[in-house]
Length: 492
Ligand code: HEM
Ligand SMILES: Cc1cc2nc3c(=O)[nH]c(=O)nc-3n(C[C@H](O)[C@H](O)[C@H](O)COP(=O)(O)O)c2cc1C
Image (cartoon, rainbow, N blue to C red; front, side):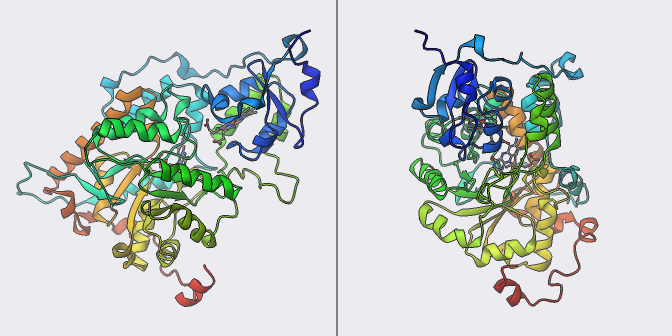
């Protein structure tokens, strides 16, 4: 008798009560995984009982199922004669034919991006590159840096410059760190290990995503081995609060048990943004695979009242009242940061709630369309709640692409900055790619400091920048008639 599972048997399991999917000729029971799946339950239900190989391969790095789905849910091979397997769909693009760009020809982070585009699979490219809706927030990130100009001073001894910074209470050789970004395994088999190695070698900090393709324990071990007794460079844990509290607590425990030095809670993602470049590619892939039905079903919201909203991969209920239980679970393991603050009011609230670190970010323009750039929010804070600068550490990210951008942020009171995409593009070129990103930025900071007549980043202050253009675009007043006390009471 054959041990193969009949395709018709698999086809019966396509509901919340029992959901199987076929991937690379094997059948998996994902019923209990539905609400844990980072890509959401809808998509798994959509493929319930069907062959999901091509769509799975476009969205996961090798070994994802083995790592995340318990063994007993691997039901066995399907009888290939009984299941219609769509041929491997192809979506071609002109760039596939253009020559590669060697790392040695990359003179800045834009070059690294171009090199990565020619190297990585299109599915990975659209995931990394995409941003939300009309790309308004992304454009704000890019354009606002140029609205600030530097004010260099001359005739100063800058033979030696100091670029070290203590961030999140941990020493770093450079004033930037690697922002959390999921799924580095899409572009390199070592995935996030390349980032952990690069950060540890350079003595800078790294904040892996909740959805790291490499287990957090392995990342911590790798960094500890490379760092040895060096005091420079630490890892922080980025937390996505899940639908289920138990899963969130599990994630926090992982962070604590593996010695992560700070908890960075992402608060700008009650739903995943509408990233059209990414979604268009998936739609094209679906058409190419002959399964058009996905186009109408793809992002259908849950029909159940209790189910997650459209694109609701993470908790959509997270609010200020959740901070006490998160803080209790994290204990005294290090500072807590809120990542994704986009207004001065929320920065003020975070301080009210005793948050140690404010991380200004619009998620690289991937969440709310037309959201402000983080550097603009920093100016808003300076204008309306300047006291915050002494009460909490402030970090920011969003299209930081030049040493000069980093210096502008430091002048305005940021303790440091972070970068997302440039490091992911770097990973596509392995350890060397990551080191190149660090080296390019380091060189640019060093050179710009000298050109500005500044011997240490600790000497930077607002007198070194002209922010007038951006300040003209700030709101005149935040209170809109309500008193601050009222706003705090109503939690804004
Ligand atoms: C069968 C077992 C599966 C497991 C264990 C699994 C696991 C995961 C994990 C861990 C991620 C987070 C990113 C990463 O680590 O790569 C992810 C993302 C994703 N998965 Fe799956 N997956 C499974 C099946 C599927 C299937 C069958 C589909 C499509 C039909 C799918 C679609 C997606 C999508 C679209 C994302 C991206 C979510 C985002 O970041 O926007 N997955 N999955
Ligand atoms: C591909 C990609 C994946 C990301 N994944 C996460 C994540 O898992 N958690 C998170 O808090 N932020 C995530 N982000 C946002 C980054 O942490 C960061 O805010 C953003 O990339 C900064 O903008 P930049 O890419 O222009 O540097 C991701 C960004 C990208 C581009």
